[in-house]
Image 1: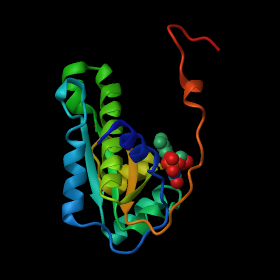
Image 2: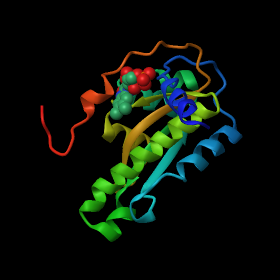
Image 3: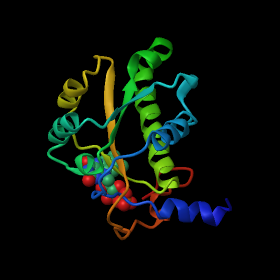
Length: 177
Ligand SMILES: Cc1cc2nc3c(=O)[nH]c(=O)nc-3n(C[C@H](O)[C@H](O)[C@H](O)COP(=O)(O)O)c2cc1C
């Protein structure tokens, strides 16, 4: 992949909220998981886990826990990416909390991009009731849900919502307005 192909690949990903029926295949799931396991991770501790939800009843309750967002019901598959505090805190103490959240976030990012690479669509969801998600997935106390990704074959192709000028994010040497 040349540099411009890489930029086009990134720029062509969109959050998709409507899907064809059918979910994803085992091969697609494996591809996404393999990509995530290549992500950088603090101390190589891989302080992330994922609950892959395809059961319709579970997806209904998960959707309720996300304020009624229907993307995961539409796609028939949700990846709930979690920070595993114990795995990271066992070495890093309190700092491990932040590292585990960072690990889970980058793992979710790799999953999202891996799905894009195999022409599936995703929608990252951060708006959900953590306690409700923990309850429905029976997550242990030391596991925090960080992001939910709906994953499937999208049925729409949204236009780019536009972005800030990249330079508006950049500060050089010190923070200057
Ligand atoms: C941290 C985070 C939280 C988000 N939460 C939601 C969400 O709860 N529901 C939703 O529909 N989209 C959510 N999104 C998707 C954004 O709305 C979307 O990325 C943004 O509008 C830009 O569109 P694009 O992904 O197509 O570039 C979230 C994205 C991120 C990174």
